[in-house]
Image (cartoon, rainbow, N blue to C red; front, side, top):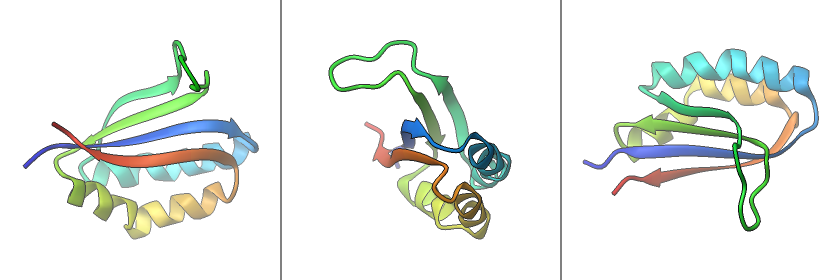
Length: 96
């Protein structure tokens, strides 16, 4: 079974306090689901239509594990705390 990667690319942060509240809940929920943070922070360089914004890369053992974590009560609580505190896109991609 291929690993999976949860990629969140932030376009803008509109409320730093909400983002901090989200992070406090999201980290433990993701780790409880088997997620391993591989990269987290400001982009070092951006090309084409990329933005020099926060990017997060998390590895899971499978797409199913990543989806289960995203849909978990713990992560749903983190999303509720985020409540519009940023604009981002998030994807789950199967590894090769």
